Length: 486
Image (tube, rainbow, N blue to C red; front, side, top):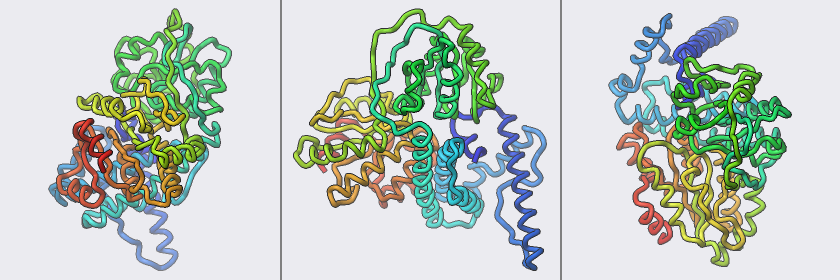
């Protein structure tokens, strides 16, 4: 689980820590193989030979490990099994990595499911089978989507059991005077521990990036020194952290190369790592607090500005009767889900323009860090319902899926028959896991952008287009007009 999560984009940039995970995996594999052989011997059976891509023996130094890795890399697999099957292998592998992130977060909060762990074994074993057909791999990808739905449900139950059901909450997005710590990433337990340890110290705590939805949880927002959110999505962190006058804690993923200006006051936790950056392995955040107290902090309050978060599963379900009635009466014409990962690549202003162009008689659901493209804009209400409903982190796609299924049940139709459209931005593996979940559920006509993943081959795109009408984004105005005309 940790090995898969470690290799999610922007999690771990420390070669030695990655090498250690490889060594641990090799040792676990050898132990399991030994247990299997012993069990077969006792039962009088011949041990099975399982497919593997793991080099034997494992190299001892980093350079040699890199050379071994290149022998099973993408280019070598294209030569061995062709571009289409390699593309499908990557689709499954990306989905597994995203799913591993969610399973790891749930595990940290004490929620586990053996069927999820079993699927990781099944799927990784399937990826080692170089004879697997394209049809077999497509089925495995959709099965990954099914199990990711189960994993997101597990994480939803873990988060709400620990911190309560999210409720709509106004969050300040400008500074308060005082010493400060900013927490980025996704790990609510790290944030909770830091809030407990900073109680009474005079240090204000801010969220950043995907930590913004934490403000909706009663068990976290009860801390009065959780004062707001600082900055936006992950790709702007170098500039934002450079200007932040306090300590910085990076949990889970989204770290970028730290600038020298804040290298001595940035810390990592969990699986996050950057060479030379101080790591907190045990949630003892005393060094982070010390760095905050030694930093100048904000001298003055900034002008008040707020966004609203906390439209989680229960809140969306409580709004369902009003939304359904508004759709029936024509007061709400359409619901758009605009969300996913943000990134630095040009073209992501598409999502800002799209949100701005959504007609005033339509609602917008959003989630993940893609929301930062438009969440500070004023959308107002329609039919007494906020037009912008922030569901939470990327894993809170589960809330949006649950809401869509309930709305379809209310109207006695399928999700694809609803006045509901999905416009997604992708960047890393968790977005792929969510896409596979949507495809598993049979949801069609999803638009994805700003560009398609490089690992999706033309033949795979053709298959996904034919089976699910998956399509790339184009021009925001044209896309909205096309959607509303359907």
